[in-house]
Image (cartoon, rainbow over all chains, first blue to last red; front, side):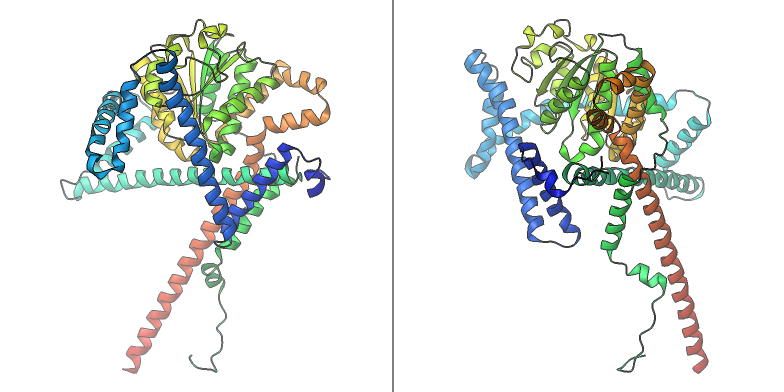
Length: 213
Length: 323
């Protein structure tokens, strides 16, 4: 273990050390919510929202408005970016109820374009490729389990007939498969959340307090 | 009994557990996380097949092959994603692969730059000679599709503002045909976007590194071959760390580093290279604690319910007797 105390960790005062202290204090403010809601938590929460909004606005401004519109049009003399630029401006008509209908043209363009891009890829990747893989003849216990799980889970969501007899039995097996899936998903979620806690604790005990190496 | 003379009934352990303040649970979980920092268990890391598949694929690539890494995560998921990024970058630099970094998520922009420059410095790699960081570009799906036609058209400049045409390293890299592997390190749906818009239309090989919450959703893509492998959360990161650390031992890189670096610097570096593995000790203890809580909580709930039912039955039997 290090012999570094709070003050030896604070001195010499460098921008990095200052950033660590700010991070540590804000982390403690956020975790104070675990005890009960309080002004420190509220302050840290509002600060996070504000800083995130500022950061995102700056990134979007630089990447989209400057990089994709202003630079190509003003420096490159390319006029095509003016079309999405104008469509983007039309979105602001939503602030004026009398002209809000104009924004629908921009939305229609966006929804149409995105649907055109996404639907073929989604169909291919999420439906056809999966069905193809499920139909491929493979002889193994895993493949058999997968097939039984797939069919029984699908039958559970078949609501056109009452779940009795063979259909009832199969859908009950389907429920078991679904439960195993939910359990695995819960386990992964716990792992993810604990990972975040570990990250913060490592930051507090190592980077801030210097108690671990 | 009611009234002033009522004697307080002693609570059973089940009732104590049922009424336990949640803050005690938080405290126990915090202790379970922190104690392994001071007393490391050094639990073994077993490498799973989806992680090994990514590692093995990178091993097949000859030096100079191009790997595009997409940094699609933010600070909120750093404990899971950053060790993953570091391990993949280390592997690429050990094998002298050309790395192109991009970000499709605004939060990943700065983190990608930091990760690339940090790991590049550890391996003596130079920006624009061994790797390039192109930064953030809005419109992820359109960007991924457009890379299939012309990378230079999508990213006219690198993150530092240098025109892409002036970067010699990218002279021969124009489309997915020139990219050997895409690695998406994502805490969002963007990992799936790479499958949808790079693998599906262009048959680009894609490896996925995702948060543990998402990992389950991506297993179907492994069975179909739409993704070559998967790193799931901190566990996936620790497995990849182990594979890269073992590789460096095997190649003598670790030994050379031990001889060359001063002790403090070496210790800091080795800690960085084992960050996820160190975290997995705490992870294991917390999981054991949570399982114990679930078992205890359920045992308390069911035994209490059985006792109350028995009391209710006895009460109703007494009531019938008096009638």
